[in-house]
Length: 294
Image 1 (cartoon, rainbow, N blue to C red):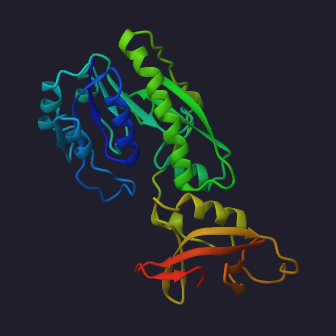
Image 2 (image 1 turned 45 degrees about the horizontal axis):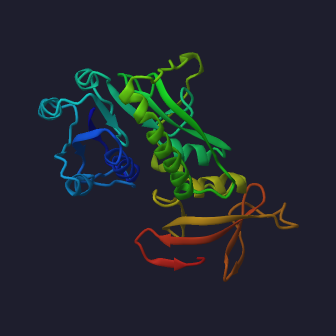
Image 3 (image 1 turned 180 degrees about the vertical axis):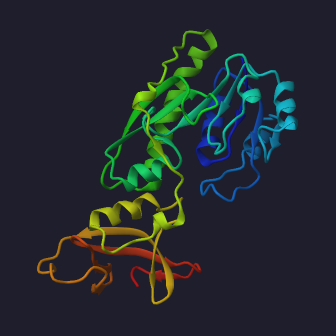
C-alpha cells in the first residue's frame, strides 16, 4: 500500500520515521522548508532523502502543482500529520482511502488551533491523541483511533508534547496493519458535542498579575519551550517566563497584585490575585539571559 506523507513539525518527523519502518510504502513527502508560525517546525526533506523517498517543498499544498505531484505518486492513502492549513476537496479525494489527519485533543471536543497550549493553559487533567479521516471541516472527520493522554500539574509544553507523541506513535503501529487489510473502523463524530479552540493571539500570552497564581502558572507551562513563552513588562522591557512555582505565603492578603515580595537565588516571588508565584527562569525578549530571577 502506497502512502504520501504531509507534515512539517517535530512530531511529523517521528511519525514519518515510524511509517517508513512499517509495511506501508512511503512514495512521497510534502513538507515546508521553513515556518513563521510553527515553533516546533521541522523540514522533513532530510528524513525522506535518507530513505531515498522523493520530497517536495510546498507553500500551498492545495496548488495544482502539488496536486499533480501527489497524484503522480498514486497513493492509496495520504497521511497529513502536523500541517496547519486545511486541505481542499481535490486533495482530500485524491487517494482511495482518503487523507488521515492527526489532532492532539479528544475530538469532537476541542477542535481547532493550539490544542496542547489551551489544554495546559486551562488546567485540564487529560487530553487525547486522535487520528481521523479528514474532510473539508476543521478536525470534523470520522475517527480512526483515539487514546487518552493524562496531564499532571507538573507537565509543561515539552513534556505534554512528548506524551502525546509517544501515544500517537503507538497508535500508528496499531492502525497501519488495519489499513492494509481493510479491517479498520470509522467512528463518526457527534457534532452536538463539538467545541472549538480559537487561534492564540499574542495578548493571550501576557501575564496579568491580578490573575490567581494557579492561572499564571498554567499559562507559563502552556507557553514554555518549544513555544514562545508567557510574557510581562518590567520597567518597559518585555520578559519571557519559562518556569515558575506557586508559592503560598502567609500575611499577603493586603498586598497588591504585582508586588515583588522577595528575590532569592532560586527565583523572584511576586504577589498574584490569589497566592504568589515564584519566577524560576526568565529571559529578556532580546535573548539575553536574565538569570534565575530578575
